[in-house]
Length: 101
Length: 101
Image 1 (cartoon, chains in turn green, cyan):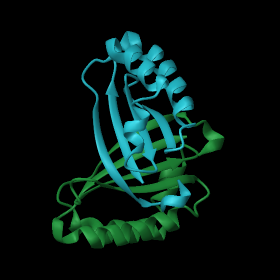
Image 2 (spheres, each protein chain N blue to C red):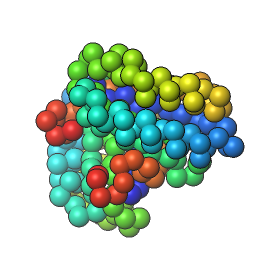
Image 3 (tube, helix red, strand yellow):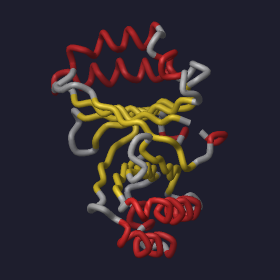
Image 4 (cartoon, rainbow over the protein chains, first blue to last red):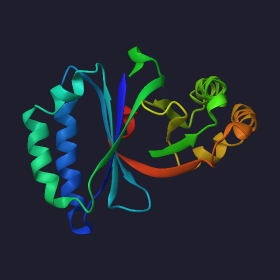
């Protein structure tokens, strides 16, 4: 399992629109066979900060995700909302094991 | 749901011992009624970096966790393994909704 944490900080006036667009993208992404989880969390103290926790079943799944219509629509919609460039970190799962994601 | 991301960087010679102690703690923590998830991931490019993703069902659950024997044992075991102080960020879940964690 490849787990990607995407860190986002949006312009304050865009936070609710970003949330709506991202939840729509999460729902659609979960229908991809290569995606086990697509969690979206919002910072408890800074409502302009979000983390997307994306769990991919294979090393090819991230590239397949980036070709989907829902990802491309999300990418275009949120581009002007960013307060700074997104950053991401890649992890491998230790717990739970693959079948439990 | 309160989701806590704990960021850890350990001394290189301690990485495997940290992993073993943390997996043991994760297994025990998942038996706590207030804990929905206790994921452990390791950085794909820096094997000395880990993130613990802890999902708590209530605002009281983190304090209850810190009173358990398994947490206290873990805390003591990993203290000398840290390359720098741990940091944590608190989030609220947007997706999935509470019953799906």
